[in-house]
Structures are given as structure tokens and as C-alpha cells.
Image: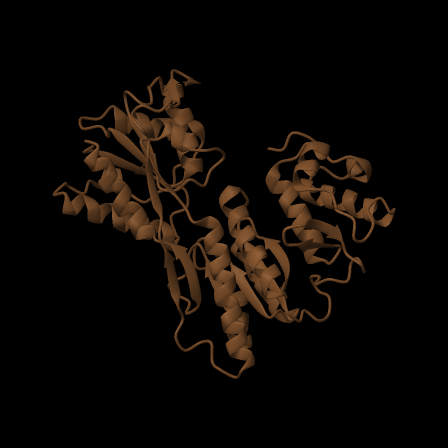
Length: 391
């Protein structure tokens, strides 16, 4: 959670007002007062973090919304500036959105921020304006964002889909309108749209092979979301690697059920049951960095040493901190490349549509390679011992 509140007029906001909105309002007041003039460099992300005591993600979101609404402009290689005619950009509910892209995301964090950075950079290069909606994993909010984007007349949509198969109204509206749409990070198998994803099957397969090559034989999986293409593909790759190695597929170690959302006592009870059984796992394969962080805390609370009693591995590096020092192996996601590639594919679809070519005939799924990183045996690493993390 962010460690401070924005200053100025944001101090009187109701407790439920998001921090990014408080920051944004304070910056709008500064623009209106003439504190920042057109053509003069605007406050940076780092300066926002230091001034308001907020996280990088909060600063990014506040600046992204100001840019989407036309209050500031980004100039590649130069920085962010107040617009010559502030406030005349693409706004939700506001008139023409020619050459505008809607970017609809879930949650926040380094992975999502890097996807957005890739989309944003490509938009700037290709001459599109961008407006952003965060849906926090809520399919209904996603549905409303899709409907709004279509009705605002955007040229195209990049969406990081919410978990599950909900939000039917929004997806139906996109299908009806013919507005080009590209899914980023994951795809929905029930929808025929373009998608750009990491090679999630390879994540499960290659990471498991790496762990097996290191001598591990009993691997338990821990999950966050469970109803997404990325999770199903990672599990399929993991099971494939186990079968290729001639190892049994144990349901208690490969069951696809949530771990991170459980109360701490339930998570720790589940871990204790696994680790105190007749054939305990020697490594916990975590679906992302957030699950890995939760597992590390839980193992410390239970009195286990990492490494030593058990190892940790991460199917991706999306989490609250750099996961590699805690892991035997982890996968690095091509997050920024996902966003950049998705936007360039969307631009191609927009161009095809403008030329009268159909964009619905042959959807493309672009699969980007991933990198498995192992902990060098001679390198310093974090060690968890009875509730503490020691280097």
C-alpha cells in the first residue's frame, strides 16, 4: 500500500477516493493555476512518488490519465509536457475519438505497468492517442469499459482480459461494432480475437525441466487465478514435462485451486499438510511472484528454511519485488514486448479495416518466447529462516 497522501486539495478527499485520482486532481489544479506551462517539462513519475509519497504504479496511472484526457503530452526521448490546449484529448464519454486507442487492463503492478508502457510507446510512435481503464479483475467493469470504448468511437482496443468468461455485453458490443481488438497477456478461447501472449506452455514445461535437471522430483504447484488461458497452459506444460520424465502426476500436487486469496491460516494449513505428508514436495512451483511472496511468508511462519527444507520457483516474475533471489529458478516475462506487439498488431488491423479488408476472418495468436533464469550457485541469495529473510 502507498505510504502517503497527496497534498493540496486531495487531503479532503473521502477515504474511498483512489490515491491516483487524488494525485491527478492535485496535478490538474497545478496546471490550472499556471504552475506548469505548455511546452515546459511536466513533473516526472519519480517526482510524483517523492512529492506525494505514492508508489510507482500510482504515479504511472495518474500521468496516464492526464495524457489520455489531453492535459499533458509525451514526447519520445524528451519527457512529458503540458499540452498546448489542455484538456482537449480523448475523454471517456467525450465526442470524437479519431486515432484513439482504448487500453483496458486488470490490476496494477510491474508486469501490467510494463505492458502499458509497451502499448503507450507504440501509440506514440504510430500517432494514436490512448485512454486507459483499470478494471481490477471485475468482468462487469471490463464489460462497461468495452461498451464505453465502442460508443466513444475508438479506432481499436487493447485488452488484458479479466479472469473467466463473464462480461458478455461488452464483448458482444465489440463483435457487433467490428472495432478491432487485440488481447494481451492472455486469450479467451470462447472469443475469436487476435492475442499476444507469452509462451505459457513453455513456462510450465521448461521451468519444470530445469527443476528436474537440478535434482528435484516432487513439485507442488500453487496458484493465484485459475480460470485463465495463461494458467491452464502453464499447468499443461508442467504436466507434459513430468510425463516426459516418467514421473507420476499427483493430483494433490497439480490441483488447480487458489492459494493466494486464502486467509493466512488456511494457506499455512495447506502448506503444512503438503510438507508434513509421507512424500512431501521439495520445491513449490508458484504461478506468479505474488503467490511466491505469500508462500515465502507462510513458510517462514511455519518455521521452514528456504533454501534448505524446501525450494521456491516462480512461473513468472510479476510480483511485489524481484523474486529471483528467493528462487531456485524463475521465468522472466516479455511484458513490455507484449504491449508493443499487441499495439502494432492492432494498428495493422485498424489499417486493414480502413482499407475495407475484414479483420475477423483469421485471428492471430502471437506467442512470445520467455527466459528461464536459475540462481547461480556462487551468487548471494535470500534465505528465509524462521520468520526472517537473511542474505
